[in-house]
Length: 91
Image (cartoon, rainbow, N blue to C red; front, top):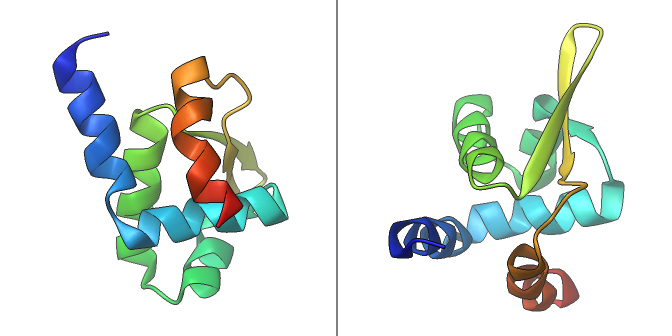
């Protein structure tokens, strides 16, 4: 693993709203961008940006359902992803 990739992961996990998204998706399993935005009380635009960052770093998967895109915790998390998520999802 490159240091820059690890830095990106920590930067992504260093944001409270992204942590809120991870916790919400742990509880609800799969949600649309709109439902995530309502759940964390944030605009659609900002929520989409946060979801994109979590997706790009491998924490989330997305799936198109009719006209919506639904996000969920990634099915294939690496051992390091799982380790980093443990304290986030327990709180």
